[in-house]
Every structure is written in C-alpha cells, then in structure tokens.
Image 1 (cartoon, rainbow, N blue to C red):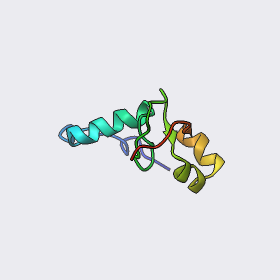
Image 2 (tube, rainbow, N blue to C red):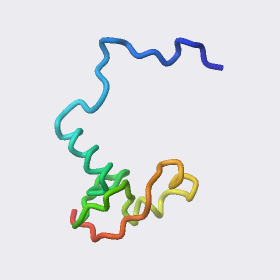
Image 3 (cartoon, helix red, strand yellow):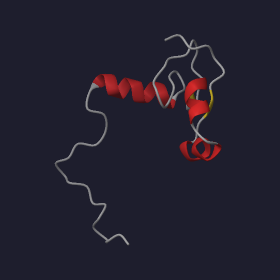
Length: 78
C-alpha cells in the first residue's frame, strides 16, 4: 500500500505553524482555551482539547474519539 519512503520529510520543508499567530492558536486549542475545530475562545481554559457546542453537534461520536476532544463546558467569549 505505502512504500517505505512515502512518508519521508523533505529536509528543507519547515514543520509546524507558519506564523506566531498560528502557533498561538495551536497552543490555545491544545490547552482548551479555544475550540479545536473553529477557534472560538472560552472564558476559561479547559486544560485539554475541546469543541464548542456548534462543532460538537456537527461531528459524530466517532469523530470525537478520533480527534481526542471533549465538549466544552465554559462560556464562549468570541
């Protein structure tokens, strides 16, 4: 199916976010300050990846498990 070299990274290709803003959003999504899907922020960080109610409703239970997220419990602020 996949060859041995199909997943090798090009040494010149940077890995990770392109801008400081993207890095910040990635950190905020990882610690639950923002929705992992749409990026809406919450009044408090959850400490783990979460989805806002809208994104939670738009995804299936299998997606929730695959994504490793839980439903947010804190109020959305943006």
